[in-house]
Image (cartoon, rainbow, N blue to C red; front, side, top):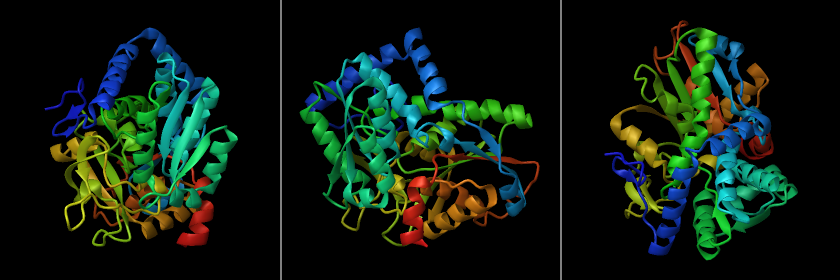
Amino acid sequence: MTNELNGTFGDFGGTYLPEFLAEILGELAEKYDELKVTEEFQNDLKALYKDYAGRPSLLYYAERLTKELGGAKIYLKREDLNHTGAHKINNVVGQGLVARALNKSKLIAETGAGQHGVATATIAAYLNLDCDIYMGARDMGAQKPNVYRMKALGANVIPVTAGQGTLKDAVDIALGAYAQDHEDSYYLLGSAVGPHPYPTMVRDFQQIISEEIKAQIQELEGKQPTAVIACAGGGSNALGAFTAFIPDENVELVSVEPAGKGANTDRHGLALGKGAPDVIHGFKTLVLHDEDGEIAESYSAASGLDYPGISPILSMLKEKGRISLGAVTDKEAVDAFIALSHLEGIIPALESSHAIAYLFQDHGDKYTNPDDVVVVNLSGRGDKDVENVFENLM
């Protein structure tokens, strides 16, 4: 049973933390519940979406991609055109307003691909707050442009060398730093994961994506989409694209996970596809496990998808049968990265390329009807990935 007041979504979510941290986040949840219904907060949020983030983002008809695939009309929700280049800005402006209301002086965040780190550093600069960003050392090497952007914005970028030096490890260290400095700091979590109230907050702030898609596709096509497709690492952009459509059973919602080196290897991030319930980072969700039953290391060439868990909300939707699952390998994602660049003059983030690649897979007659309309959430732009793709992945 879902109870959003305590952050449970079916059998998933909740808060699994030491008592003092659970109390701090309980206070945050109460404050958020109070804030989100006030006219002042909603007006401030709408103003930042419009005048700072640049919303609404375009819904773009990808004509050449449509012709290449030879079936349904393909639209791209252009979150790559947002300020900072990804959907991450939607969440940080909302949580930044919460931090300001709590009179915090510093933002603490984790980042994988660096887009959430850049967005957090951006809102910290806008609100005149200090900013510490924890980033896995391996990810820093693959995402140098975003590291420089964070530093240019005034953030303190802290390399994490523990474990594999990826997103999971950055979350571990960032949570520890927050526990030590919670009086003055606000932990700005980037995806719809973690203990309550983070999955709820992130979903709420990203929901603007699907609300816009719903209005835009109605204006452009006069009907709802056949399917909405989004990549999923933690799940923020997928939930952003899906949430307004969840009640509409005729709209297929496709969550595309990273199959990495292959679904039958131990080098993937298929938490929804191959995970089992467990507790990670203070919440319960579907998580990858190794042969000994311990939480496994995930893998994806796309740093933002390299996480062994998933949003508890997506876990619930999977268990209910409301979402379809996709799995895309590194190679398929790179091929899609190049294909979209050539066909539409749009360089997608490597994360978003997973959603594009799903269209190129053989799904039989799934999207072959030219009367159908498919929307892909293009969650970010690929400037950050160009060097890595051509030097390491081609």
